[in-house]
Amino acid sequence: MPISPAFRPATIHAGLGAEFFDPVHAACFPQLTLRRRNDRWAARVGLDGLTDAEWKRHFGAFESLPGSLPQPLALRYHGHQFRTYNPDLGDGRGFLFAQMHDLKDGRLLDLGTKGSGQTPWSRAGDGRLTLKGGVREVMATEMLEALGVYTSKTFSLIETGEDLVRSDEPSPTRAAVLVRLNHSHIRIGSFQRLATRQQHGDVQRLLDHSIRHYLPEALRDDPAERAAAFLVDVVGRTARLGAQWMAAGFVHGVLNTDNINITGESFDYGPWRFLPHYDPDFTAAYFDHNRLYAYGRQPDTLLWNLLRLAECLLPLCPKPPLEAALMTFAPAFATALDGAVIRRLGLVSRPEDAALAQAWWAFLASSKIPFEQAFFDWHGNQPARAARSPGAAHYASPAFTPVRDALSGYAPAPTARLDHPYFAKSAPCTMLIGEVEAIWAPIAAADDWSMLDGKLLAIDAMREAYGVT
Image (cartoon, rainbow, N blue to C red):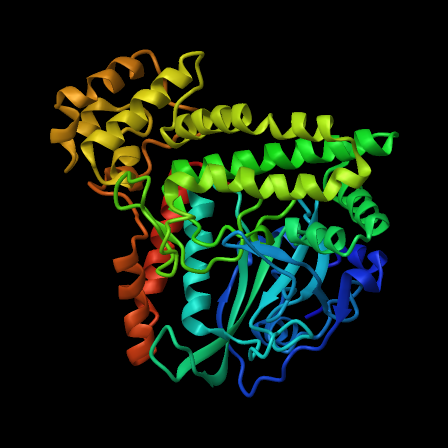
C-alpha cells in the first residue's frame, strides 16, 4: 500500500555538502527475514501502514522513501576511543538512510543503519552486524525507553541470511541489518574531524546547521555567542542523559566521543549492561581493563567528551564563554539526577528532592539490594507493597531509616499507574546479562523467539505502568 500522506520526509543533511558525507549503496543481502518492526514509532512518522514486504524493501533492500534522501549517506567523523584519538572512523557499517519529521512534535528524525554493508570508512571490516548484536540492541533500547531514558529506538531488525565470523562469539554466526531512529546522528566526533583538519569554516557550517535543525534555542546573531549557547545546550542535554543512565542503573560500555551526539540521545549499543546492584566500579565492556567507562565514571567521562567538543569551538569563540558553558555540567547533572530519581520513584517533586535522592543512593550503596527491585518496590511511595517485597528485610533495617524519613510527605505522581497489574508482581522486569544470554540461546539453537517476545511484552507492561509514552 502507498505510504501514508501524513509522512513528512526531509533531506536536511544533503544540504551540508560532500565534505560531511559520502553517498553509498547498501549491500545486497541473499535473504530478508523480518524479525522486528517498531510499529509504535512507525506510527509517529507515518510508516506503520507498510506491509511486511514493503517494510523489507525499504529497511532491508533500502529502497529510498519517497521525498527523503535519494541515496544513503555515510557520515564522516573522528573520535577519541578510550581517550586515544582515532582519525580513521566514520560510518563503516552503517549510513544515514532517511530523514523525516515526528508527526507528534514536528522534530526532525533520522533513520540510520547498522550492518548495511561496507563504506569508504569500513577499514577492512565486512560492514555487517551479527543477529545477536541486533537482538541485544532491541533489548537495550526497549528497556531504556521504558525506564525513561532518552534513547534511540530500534526501528527495524531484519535477518539477512549471511554467516559471519567473529572473534568474540561462536562462529559462524547469523547476520542482520538494523535500522535505528534518532533525533540526530551528528556526533562530537563530527566536529572533531573538521577541527583536526583545521576546517574552521566547516566547523561553523556544521554548528549553524545543527542549531538551525536541532537546537534552535541556541540561535544568536553574534557567531561567538552562538557557539557558546550551542555548547551550553549540548552540555545540558548530555548531563540529562548521564543522569538518566545513572538512575536506570545502565552502563553504556563505550563512551567514545563518536558515540555522543549533540541532542543528548543514547545510541550505538555494544557491550552494555544493567547493574545487578549499586556498584560504581561495575564495567560493561570485557576489554575495558582500566574500568574507564565504569558505571560510576560515566558522568566524568561525559564531561571529558564535552571538553573535546569545546576545543573544536575555540576558533569560533573566546575561551572564557566556553569554559563557563562547561561549568554548567556539574549543577545540571546534579539537578537532573535528583529529578530522575524522583521520576523513577513515581513521586511528585518537592523542594526536598535532593535530600531524598541523597538518602536513596546511600541506601543502595550500603544495602546492595537488587537495583531495579528497590525502585520497583517504592514506586509511588507505597509502604504496604514494599513490605511484601522479597527485599522487605532491607527496608526494615536501620540503613533504610533516612530514606523512610525522607519519603514522608511525598505523594504519587499523576503518571504513576499504581493499579496496573505490573505492580501486583513481587519482582520487576529486569535486563541483566544472564537474562540477555538466556533470551539469545534458544534463538541461536532452535530459532525460537518466544523468550524475546515474552520479554518485550513484559517491557511494554512496565512502560505502561510507569506512564512512559
